[in-house]
Length: 147
Image (cartoon, rainbow, N blue to C red; front, side):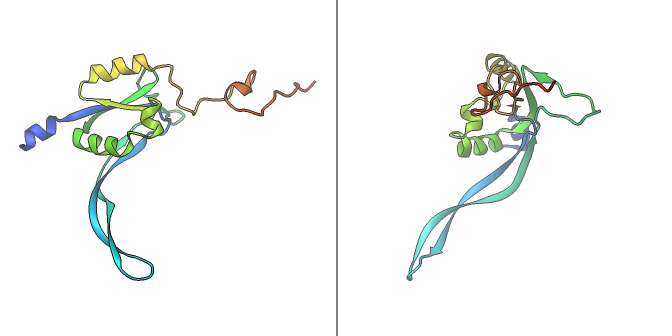
């Protein structure tokens, strides 16, 4: 594979987290670990490679222009596909993926369509409704308003 082909293999990542996250790459390495009582065993350790991408979130600083959101998701374009595949393989069982908070695809329009389909998915960072706090947080009762 040449450099031009690698440069084109990118994905668009949709993220519903307020602050976004840093997607880092790790590689598995076999190492020998000493065992208590003597002896050793072979273990697989994941070491950071140094490659990383900042996936942008939906929040923004007060006073700065708001980000462009697509159905409640902020889309980070041009994330290397191999970095996404590495991250996804390690995190496919996480709540970020299972609860539709993070998603990526090679086609930007497919990411937009996916965001449209999952617009109602809660991120877990929504505010508490003061008129019905028990919807999201158990054990909270609305107090009487002061007179």
